[in-house]
Amino acid sequence: MHLKNLVSQLQDFYLLSVRAPMGILRRPFYFREILEQMDYAGVGSLFIVVLVSLFIGMALSLQISAELSSLGLKMYTGKIVGVAIIREIGPVAIALSFAGRIGSGMASELGSMVLGHQVDILRVFGVDPIKKLVTPRVISATIMLPVLTIIGDAVSLFGGYYISVFVSHQSGSFYWSQIKDIMDFKNIFSGIAKPFIFGYIIACISCYMGLSTHGGSRGLRKATTISVVLSTIMIIVTDFVMTRILFFALGMKV
Amino acid sequence: MIVFENVSLAFGNHQVLDGLSFEARFYEKIAILGGSGEGKTTILKLILGLLQPDSGRIIIDGKDITKLSERQLRETRMNFSIVFQEGALFDSMTVRENVAFCLREYYDLREEEIEQRVRELLRRVGMEYAIDMMPEELSGGMQRRVAIARSLAACEPKMILYDEPTTGLDPISADNICGLINDLSSGEPPNRRGLIVVTHKITDAVKVAERFMYLRSGKISFDGNIEELKNTDDAELRRFINEILLVGT
Image 1: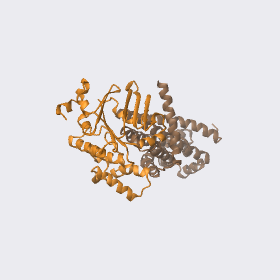
Image 2: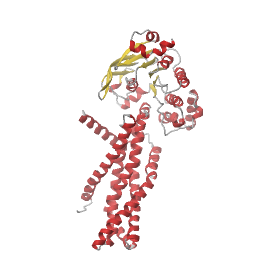
Image 3: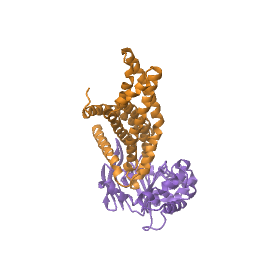
Image 4: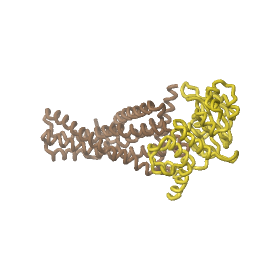
């Protein structure tokens, strides 16, 4: 019975994941909803992304410069901080913050709509809930997470710069020249490709969990918690898989 | 015509409906009575195709809706409208936007036409003054009135389904809602809009319905008119309708 349920849930999740982005290609187009969701997910998350990124950049710079200092290689702090942030830490940390703020919001909002029969009402009125509710959220998350990641990466690099120059007493111009050196296609592509996939995964998981809510307020709590936990796990696992694929595709050697 | 043939449905280990069968015409005014958790709301959801039964057939207008796709079900659902318990208004929209929702989804109307239709519907339920309010600012009775207006916006349904329309309301608000339900289903059969109301408030059921069904252990254990209901020998049902027996409605 459990296995049958699991297979059935996976099938439903797969259908939602395919139908949601395809919804943008069919009438009616819910542009207003997409813009509203982009505003909520993007502009609404800006403060937390800037805050998280700034402190990650500073902490990373502190750790790396301390370690490199003992080897006499402190001047390479900028290069290592830059690569770590752009390729790996920036996309993952911002995706995790996004899952916590936006993913949980999606799951709880859709969950309460299910419990309040609002989703049933949509179906009775002949409106496809996936197209009306899920498509705008998936599109907005897929577009806004890369945008937030670019902003977050820039803020992290500034955080790293602050520590390198004012705490670790390195040359600011040398720090930026090292950052400039690592800004090649491979690094930028690695850093930008991931958030597209992370945004899609977070939105699909959160919307699916929200729409499968049952069992009152306890069920809503469970759905929201599972959506965040599952998104977190999937971000970490997908990050590893994508890193392997990108290393192979871009011809990067270990 | 709505036909339920041996419909069974379980949620996990809980058998909600167990071989349920009945027939109803679109112009009938039916109250489905029963205790909490007996599956009254489930019947409404099955009629609309929002749930699928584990076994049995549900035939609406000659079509077995258990075999229809979501897209095909939309046509069958046009026969009905539903007012859920608590109204189920879209809480991110104003009263105006809630009522206009279907008009925008279904028809290519100008904004002035939508506004005119929304005001007309809200006037019909006595809620025009609340047009700019948010659902959270409305009382339970007001939310249900707006939900009724919204249910009439999309099309002219042959039958309206009401899920516990008066539960949680004070006696005056409940009486007003019953009056509104009667207004919307006024006229003589077969030229009137029918209704199915599921409720455990027997005093409200007798105000709006002509046919009564009592749901017990997943089956219809009683099906008859008000006189037959009052004269029933079923001890459990007599306890359920005790309120009207005492008042002598």
